[in-house]
Image 1: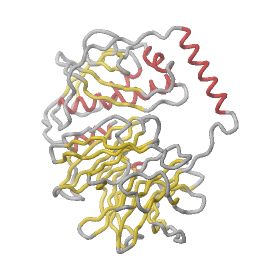
Image 2: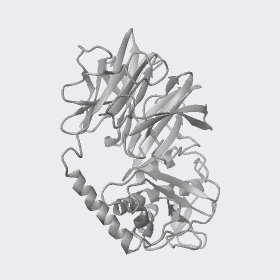
Image 3: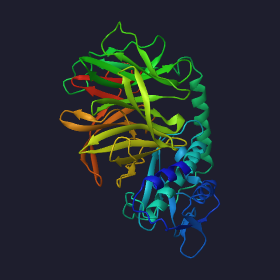
Image 4: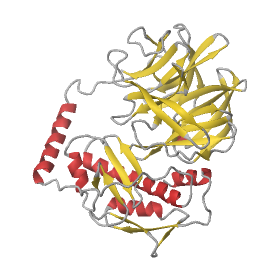
Length: 444
């Protein structure tokens, strides 16, 4: 959380550097105490005094408070029990102030003992909502709070019978997972289609042959000197350690080559051309960096140019050069499955980032994480995003960028891509067209 606050402080504009925000925490629940410990560490936050923002876990009464799926959170955490008894559903955690909704996260379902895991998810995500609200109060260029809503009803007590039924369901689930074939092995792979006709075909796909026995994901297609190159994440068994590789598309006899490997995980090789040079921004969240590389000998040799951002774990950073400026769409992953989508703007590719006033774009796991390069598709400027609300890598949504400037951003959904474009798939999470050719990855 400290990294998130530092990133937003360092990149925001308009903040009064002398401004302070005062908080008081009124409650004894563990998640509220966790919020207090995080907020107290912020340099511009003070405690104590008549002008404090009061954050409470009381089930009723005034003060800032959190809500879970439209019900007000309280100290006894009955809302988590009530929600968990309904099964593994996503949770919507919101922060409410007297001005309205200060921020919301839609967090994917929790595994295992749902109420314990969802409680832990709320504990980790809630401070981020307070950080965003505090920065907004201090004058940072963050999207304003949503209009006020009616008072939230308190969450009901689950009672003995629902809790007993909850444990019965857990025992049944554990028994099922022990049955033969109940949890089959699935692997990521990449498929290419030579002529899509502007749609996602239901047949004619060619699966890419990578390194023997390895998984492959995150395809990026690039035309260069009459060749079509496929950059992708190569996953080395038996670990989930990723490195970056390249091969010629539709060349079954071509051997892939490793182009970048580090002691930490790499993925999402976002390759793009600018000013006659080829650049790449891979995902290196495991190293807590966003790094820019330039091709020394395309497509095999790459030199590190600059670390653009260091500190928070940003995933799937996707650049866009638009109307003379660079825009960077990226996502910070908070502990326990919460996503926060951010947008930055810069005067040059290697220039300092400034926080776009439309940030944060969303805390909705259904549209918060990038799913490939921003490109033209059927005459529209398309930004693909992953739908991770059910689970990571389930499906994708194509969103058209309608308006983009240093002060404005607007997009809208135009298409959903489910893992139904080939038989036997259970997930798909990267979309990359190159002319009439389309690359998708899939969990099968």
